[in-house]
Image (cartoon, rainbow, N blue to C red; front, side):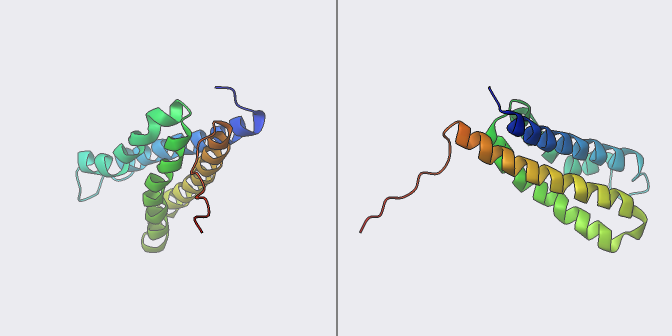
Length: 130
């Protein structure tokens, strides 16, 4: 896959933010939520496993995967906004989650668009049927 410099930078932003979010979720759930009423397995299934679904396609640079990864990211975006409001003691984690999610969303969107165009992928425009 031959990427221009700008597309490589955008992919790096998306992938680094996504992997950072994955690391943050593992740290947050394993080491910082020890007093939670939910089991560790449940919390990992809820907060870590969804991020693993898109990871293979993202590592391979597939623009379609970057596009639908945004649906997964919205779960974390909403979670971060909720935690900022309801859990003052966890605002640091919530703010980091919000920043990483936003950066990953922007990077995934731009990469999917640029690389999709470069590969000739996309939605075909409907011809005027009148």
